[in-house]
Image (cartoon, rainbow, N blue to C red; front, side, top):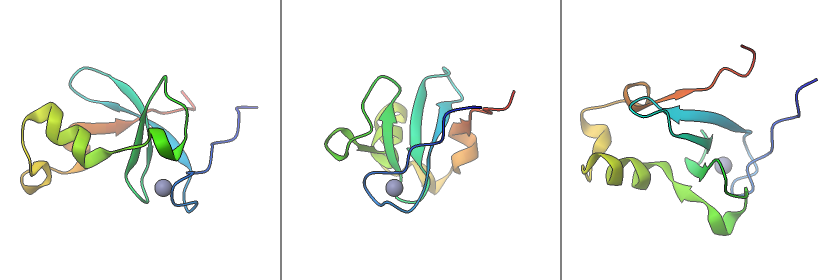
Length: 82
Ligand SMILES: [Zn+2]
């Protein structure tokens, strides 16, 4: 049995799931409800949480990354069942 997904500590509404950036495969955990992001090696704590928008804007050098993109252009979920 796989380990149960952790609940998001920030919003307590959604499970934190594994994602990666499509360009370089950098792995992170994301809550799709409140857009909290944690890098793979970080503890899932509110104090360590980043926002997906901030991380994407920084990576792409675009302060408004979603004006011309959608999530699927930039990130993809990691299929845990594969
Ligand atoms: Zn959340």
